[in-house]
Length: 269
Image (cartoon, rainbow, N blue to C red; front, top):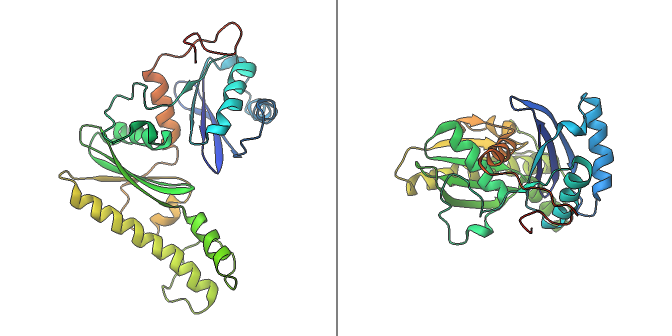
């Protein structure tokens, strides 16, 4: 079985794939100070609950946008599953060209989404990921990663509005029925929700004008279903897109071997 770890700024997703399907998917809040042993206590309990054992795991892959979390996640794989994880980096075999000025600066999650989405559609597309940041990633008709746009995530915007304006409360996100809010909270909810709908539709329209090919629009992230209620722009919602990208990346690249002293890989990483 393949252990997949997707470490984002807000949550870390752990999943196991048995070669046919996801046998389990679990989330925990991102904390760079959490040790490998702490991860292990939590994860092994969930594996046991799903009637899975650590010895079933024979490979692992990690994608992270939180460099400080990588050390403990790697130690988790080495010490508790006896495997050396493949780390998602721009230097791996992705199966497509990364056509940006500095490929090493592109977040692993963005490349993983591009990989999985192109596998689904096989044509030019845009992936919109509703995470800590809202990212728009453009893939060409040949599968090449072309870049995109990064906007503040919805929860970041809500928190910033509350922190910067003393009289504005912290609100939850939801779809308001009316655009004109007849109170402070409804007005904030309208501005956040319909403002983001405008952001999504506006950026996609501008991306379409810069592209010569028809585009599919793929959405992922926890808030994708909520925003799909306010716009018909999405062709498909794929909640596990990043996990699928990690699985595909692991299939394309040889698994690293664990060194005898477990402090480095055979390749010297």
